[in-house]
Length: 165
Image (cartoon, rainbow, N blue to C red; front, side, top):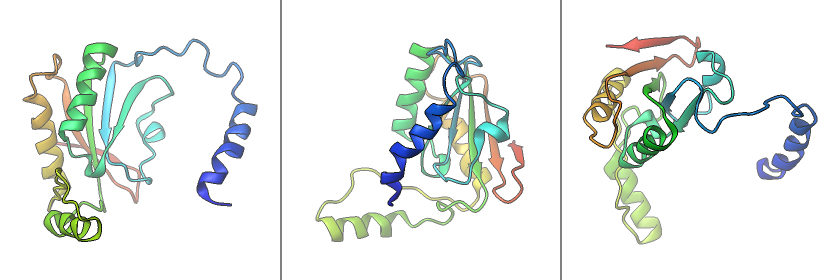
């Protein structure tokens, strides 16, 4: 069975224990928190951060890099769904570490005949990338709440989350 073929049977198992489990889940996150993190499947953010379903928006993107698309999602999160705080969470052993953007876009162009109009910036230090993303959020005029933004690094080996200055 492929991963896609497993989704519906897995949902049936989930539904068996779902009834009444999350009554009256609000559309707006209870903690007024948005979390921007990497798409890496090793990040167990709900458990690591003590979050429950309905507590926060989770926005996942390669490298936890704040791109225009992430800013769009954060603008909707704040302006329409009342979030007020933002956590940016990078992680150790990230695939974007020393990523070669130019080579990747050239590869895509060679294979498809189309050059992407987006870039895929990598980074040399996750802490620096997180700090840059925090600054990108803090300087975005679309976001009414920019004072409460913090950066963190998730250690994929230990599960520890530490603050980035």
